[in-house]
Image 1: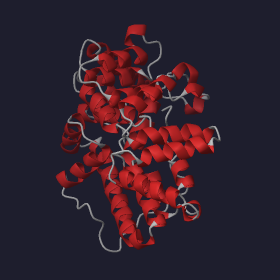
Image 2: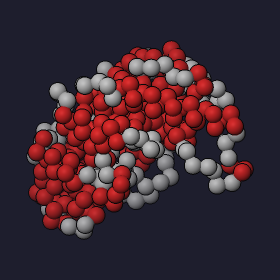
Image 3: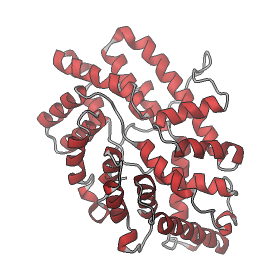
Image 4: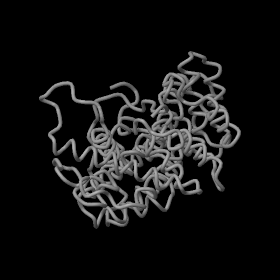
Length: 362
């Protein structure tokens, strides 16, 4: 593996639960016929898919009557993957209403980065990105988005300028918690249709809470996130060793990411910190190992929760209460009696693919 070995590699396995929920949710939301008879769903599975889609449509319709930002953005996110939505029940329109609601903030604007489905090449939404710079210029995650765009345009000067802006910020927050809070709140409004729990396959939820959990985390896992490859590439030891100002900015950004909202951001921050400050490497390696332990156990709990109401209920309640992705992880572990520090001798498995790909168009 190249330079980004242990700490960055763990970014690939941080959200096993969310990724599995998203995969299952995408499968269930598919409406096009399969390419071959061999892969076509059975009539019972087709009925279950239709029931899940109808349940999701019903949730959008009911929550569109609300006037608060949390339920409106949740309804918008549920509407996004649904085909043939009426204009007033579309992702774009509901997200606009959420942004105009009382107490709406930059987290709603961040979700609207994905309001570009008709022209995927235009993601993230340029107007929303500009608005975020004004609303949340002290959030380093906003400048990570700017770094993404500059890197894609091969604009080294703008990339470096965005890094400097990130270094001058006060926090790092990709607003995943707001996204999850909205969807988790919305799915609690109506009970799932009975057919959503019929004809299940192995691992599929068979209870109402399990279906709510599947939809909430499956939809939320499509949240727009910055690619962190540009900051990794710019802040490597070779570059920083030749430029003291760059090294200073990289270490500032790393600190913000270490103590920010995102597990993946924390992993990247720890890696940069350890690479550019050898005196801190033992500490950052230990923190990275603990982070991998935390995420592995959180993933196990989440996957089990889809068929265990005793686990699902508090997880959904925690998601509805807001907070960041990292605070949700830590609170879930503590609630289930799992230590947040890895046992002596434990090491994470080494993943196989490259880390930190962009999902800004989500």
